[in-house]
Length: 522
Image (cartoon, rainbow, N blue to C red; front, side, top):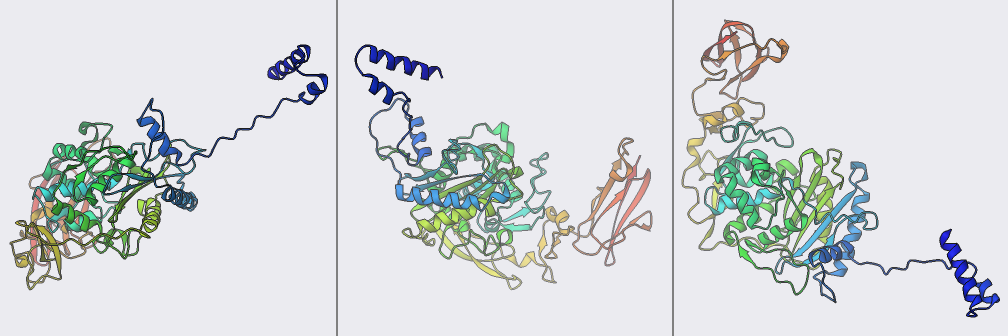
């Protein structure tokens, strides 16, 4: 209103001074309507990122963006998100990097810039399992492990190293002995932490930083959980790191401007990187977690890795063909969880759509080629060792020269053809997860309770919550007796018995074999 009054006074003053007459005053009586006609902004999140990286700069610059690709991916992102509303997913971000140059060819920061100027490609988020390939790569390159190494996927495999850490797989089941190739392809958690224990958490954390990951906090804040994704990273940095895998093990920051120079640093050997890339392309190796027909599966050789943060707050998929790396994040900017949605259902379909768009011009990855530093060998599928007549199946595996298996697998099978494992697998062998009927090498014995165990009843806790686990080192039928009375209603190698004050003689019986322990309860 005040502006209107000032406008009317200004018109009257113009008449008074003779600049306009009364007729013109009447024509101008209504204030003109202000129409905002801003020119449409192209790739606004990308432009904002350039301005933020170059404060105070002026003039014209040439960016790395491919505008046609950018437009196509913006369309794919909008279409993808409309299909994910039922999972309470409102946002997605995409980065496409040219492998050879590190140039950003496309960047989508959100579903709609007009509604949200937050750039999801530049915001640190919990990265899920996307760091695992770099940890395994480090272990292979240092010759601590091979793609055929047998790793433990058991609930107690890392308790000696990380007593207060209890990582679990997404389905709460454990596969027991698993080759590194399958552990990475299936994104199993315990083998990744076990590998971290072999490397050392601090050296492994620093190695990740060499790849360009700028974590907001230090190792002391994350602990061993950084390998499973409690550390935050930016989508653009994740894409740049995976582009380094596509280049054969060299790190380079992402480039926003055509004239920008980023140094290239070799972090891992070409041969070790080729092994990890081959695993990321292996759809058969990932089938126990993802099946054979997930959105990760391509007829061509395309590397891919997913990640889902704890609480279902962030989902990721990143991978590459010969020319480009594509990284996708999907979730909510306010951090609220999605409806029990894993990456393969949230971020992966958009990633696959972008990758197929690129494959109209791009090429799939070439298979690894043997040379004086990289060889293929036939191994036993169950043990990762040299095949024997008892091996249930054989397969071809890649090795750095000098790390090939030398031991025959024959000693790892019992007379009945079942797998024989070290005592470290005792609890797993006694669990329902042992679907392969594996045995431990040692004689039949009681694992829990330990010899001469002493327990005290807590007067506060309900009696139903005070139980001791009875576990025997055998994957078969076990009957449990306490002071001569059979207490297990079913034949199982694992049982829970409620604590009662007194001295108790615990006996496990299986196929005429007996093991005994004595415990005291106060």
